[in-house]
Length: 436
Image (tube, rainbow, N blue to C red):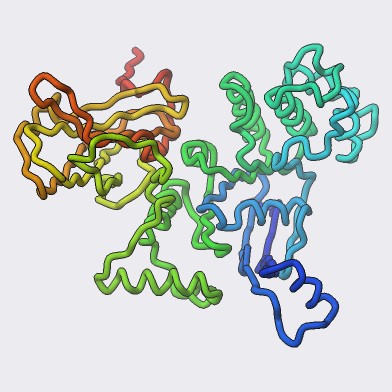
């Protein structure tokens, strides 16, 4: 069996930033005018090992601040590590900060040649690639205009076209496949598929768990600068969901890495949870929009809300096709003849996709008294396409013929649907297809 070749090898990569309370402290320490340390050390990465083999598509996932972008910038040479060893075997094209090397006074053609030269190509080599770049960008005669006149969409299309058409051996992508309109995104993903079929090495960082599940052979999970694990996309997405709700058990050998104050605090919280104490989950973890629009008389008030998956774990990410439950707790500050509990689900553009309420479902048609509390759950299968959605909640009712809004919360929860199969439209018909 032929031995696999390493494209990227990172051993014990560490990146430490010195954080100062004020700029003068940095100057005092640099000039040796302070008696002690005036900075705190923040570990963006702590002893991270990566082995990426040629021809692999590897995803990196983790919460904000986990070190995903930092490790990519170290691999591409944008940042230097504080410690550790890194070896890269192959020409890299990095889709990190699109258009970073563009001169806004130059036109599109001039910027193509400027970028190509910076990447080490001769004028003749760029001539050969020019038409492919122009066809991919598809911005027409604007390519002859200064880049400062471009819309943001045109700019990223051109920058992406340049970056992806230089025939790299290693492609590094950081959220860049979400640029442009839906047609351009489809073209980007088609190019991505081409790269996979050509046996290129791809390192892919994204919050889009659907894309991670669909394209990656293997996934690495980072958290607070530490590598928690690696494995199949499904295994690591499940582990990521546990990290989001503070229920991921850190392996024994990695516990020694938890040395800074913040991580020790997290470990203590996990220990508290294990002993039966209630752990408070952050709004970000639960997908809660703390600045959601709300209004109503507050005669009935929504005091708690969250989503759980089929295992009963609180989360903001659900696998497509699986069951999930929306939970609401309502406190009543006045007597109400017949409250109605409702939710609606929109896409990120604001289009209402679906929704229901307790009156339609004939689930609760009773009266309530002041001081009562009700816990409401809506449980259903999730057949929506992969993507980001927003949930709105409401408590309403009729008093005689008059419709009353007691409490409404608009776009208060974010729901991520994770899918490795997206069909056409908003939801999957789950067709059983037979070809004879």
